[in-house]
Image (cartoon, rainbow, N blue to C red):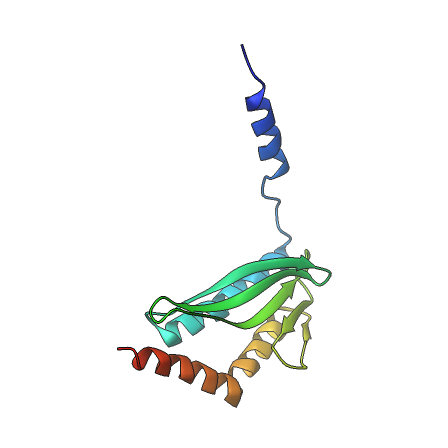
Length: 136
């Protein structure tokens, strides 16, 4: 005697199946992942740098660039990016008055590289390295 659970599970799976992302959306996410990977390579172990999804808002899906440590326990977000369903414009929250909208992949890369090169960001990354060095 069937209880119908299989039907419900199939319905849930159908509703939640992964939609095909538009090319612009995938391009935006790929560029954000490349930035995260570059920061990861720069910081090295024991840091974990990753792109984490956040809230869905009017600007799009929020992604936070997270920097984490286990020992000493530490977690911080370097910036937030809001990626709309079509991919662009990506709006950046660089934790200041600046919230640039990047119209394409080249603009997104240029704005993030400019941000990473700012003295205060370089000093912040250096302070993270010092945090690890002081606990070794």
